[in-house]
Amino acid sequence: MRCAAANSIIMVRKYERISGRQSWSEEEMAKAVAAVVSGKMGYKLAARTFHIPRSTLQRRASKVRYQQPDDPKPLMGHYRRVFTDSQEKDLVGYIKSMEQYFMGVTRRDIRELAFQYAEDNHLNHPFDVNARMAGEDWVRNFLKRNPELLNKPDKEFELEPVNFDQFYHFMCQS
Image (cartoon, rainbow, N blue to C red; front, side, top):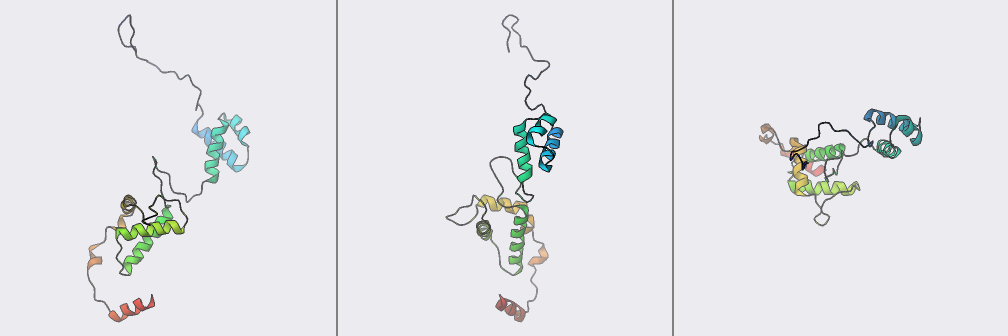
């Protein structure tokens, strides 16, 4: 800000907050949410007792009350997780079992598998419905989150003698 008379810049040395918004503490909010969720107090009484806004208390309490422990973790920005951690572990286990039974799994296979898994579990997903597969970005990030699918020890690639009778018997069973 310029002062016309002195022709110099005036700096604010000490800021004094004028607004009374969000003057409550997180500790008080946590206590109020706990009281409401446990049923000890209603929204109105808890808001008055802990000196916090009732609407904020309602919003925070409903998040705590209705959040399921296995929900996908929210991410920053407009991106969201499709699968929970346990669902991703299921996918990883299935992919590993396919590789164990000599079925090579490509990125395209993983994309198709992810789409089918999301459809079977009625999950809301951004995958391509016409192509019936997940996107390339999704599979790249999935493999980053699960590097054990990429990094295979060298001894896995060593060929061992195969008993063809056992192999044929195994193939006939499935």
